Length: 142
Image: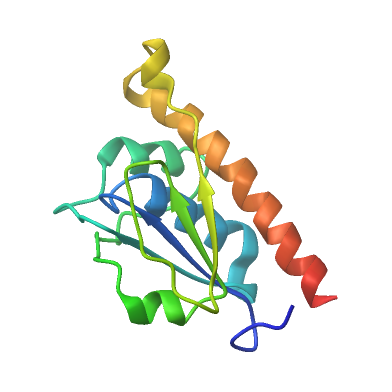
């Protein structure tokens, strides 16, 4: 696979762009450094980052406090190699020439787990998936 630019680019999308997609973007930036272009957006963005999401990332040294929710655009989707949609709530019309993945992430609240404990489980699930995707990028670059 060839990339649209000199290095792979990924766009993480969730409904609100305040939690899961921001977490995924922060985790990818942390794991990949400058080797991957990373962006995040939402189909129905909220006003601010979910504080528990930010707190769960800060615990492992990832800072998303300077980020803010943004709306997903066609241009943003066209500019990347992979669009990762997190959760079932966000819906996008797929654009030809761009690869799409949907990550049905762990939802601890179904099991009665809330608050920071919930966010830690969500973070760890997303982190594992981010590392798999990063591994795929690295394999394709070799």
